[in-house]
Length: 372
Image 1 (spheres, rainbow, N blue to C red):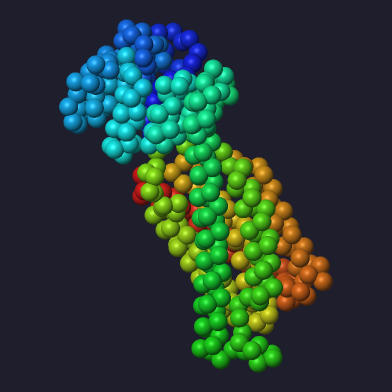
Image 2 (cartoon, rainbow, N blue to C red; image 1 turned 120 degrees about the horizontal axis):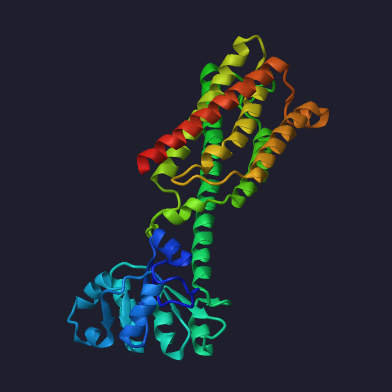
């Protein structure tokens, strides 16, 4: 991402880079100063805001540049002076041809063509002209460069939260699909049927709906409150990058398969302990629900680690409490196919849920470490 133009910053000491510019540079944003002022003025302002002003390119230099030389100037210079409006537009187009995503700031009528052409036109709300505000995509109410950097951080945090949300939902829903498909296939192969003669399914429709209602509600919403300061230390993503990248897909497939295998193992293990098929199904049901709640934590892990989320902790705890309460209340227990379990099976559910969480957490660490 390249940011053209600079709005007013605080007046730092000459050798100190303003925090907003330093944060932009750390985030992979290349800040370019373009002005119609004298080269000496442009160089002095650039040095004050932490931009290398050793090579100041003028509008006359751009006029004398041959084909391809403009891109070369953009690679070697971050300060442009005595630039006319049509040259600002040419600089934006040159950056876009080289594959850059360009955000242009401006306040005057002469900035309007470049603002319109850039990928993100940012106009000044306090001292900007009506024309610049009309053609811009965004308007800064405080005319402060730090606001742009803050918006970039907020956008990256939202992107991270959307990815966490998708990793959580896709991995847990994949485990449900694999459990139902694998359990139904095993029951058909072994000739196992319900009392009414129907096929024996590992989860009933009511149980599946309950899992999606309880576990996909509060915890999934709480993921939207994650804050990840490390996003500003990551390079920008390519515009064509998929929302679910390779590490995320690896996590979804691995964590979903792991949870389904553990649930199928419970379905096979519980009858061996002397319980009937109804208890085995209820055990798998509670494991899927509680294990799904715990999956919110490894789903949050990526190249950057978010800050602790107390709302998420509360949502997970509330979900576990609701799950246990639904098994204890006779009405909901009956609606969920006899969901109450003896305490040895509750311990088995808790242990297997912790195993699935530990496995998913380890998988998340492995895939993101390999992606670095």
